[in-house]
Length: 322
Image 1 (cartoon, helix red, strand yellow):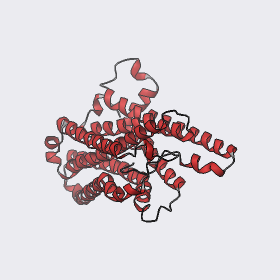
Image 2 (image 1 turned 135 degrees about the horizontal axis):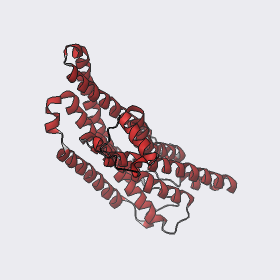
Image 3 (image 1 turned 45 degrees about the horizontal axis):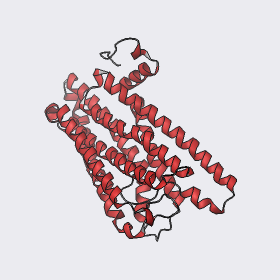
Image 4 (image 1 turned 120 degrees about the horizontal axis):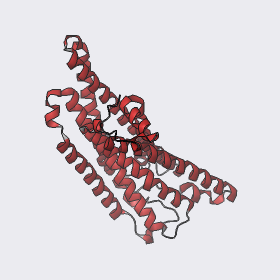
């Protein structure tokens, strides 16, 4: 999740100049296998989420539309960012400079879109749990559409700014790394704007949600059965989406912290460590579908019907997902 001009992915290949060729080739093959497998898993998992939400009318809810936007961003990471990264790593490309810039811009755009979508999801959960009587009025399809539009607009602007800040071809070194000491004074500020602000917003909202949920738990016995059931469903959804946010933080935090402290450490953090943290962040795009499948029975039912091809035999869009 780049918010500045930092590390990209030819690092191990270029640092292996003094390593036997067989080792460099082995590393390249292993990365291709790992990156290719990760890309396929990301595509498969998020495609299941997208098809489920689009096809089954039961899943046409404001919260799920935000999850749909998140799944689209994750899908595009697996479709565009990872394949470009593999190509850049093995260096079998005539337009390396252009591809490096395009991959970096897409990386910034899609990863920023993910975090702002997660931020919107936290707002949705706040109204669902803390202001349930106002939820249907405040959070509807139109409002969610505006949220999604704003999220992608902010992400696109970040991608454009990143592209404009990319060094010219004459400034390049022998690897796809947009890492220039003169631009590193902006790393901390840019990282805080792109990641820190949404992270603070989400953390504050979920802290408030859990405090309210705790109070609700003490008074649950005095609530009507129907109200209690709704409250239980909403709390489960909030818990699940909070786990999604937590996984996102754990996946991206090592990379974001390392690039933020890299200038202050006199650039002593090994590049292959930064690269590993970056791949850890990208792997987050694979995890969300597994979280949905684990916690939501209706997603499990939808996934099963899609994988077995049942939806192609008849119209099951109005089916009741258990």
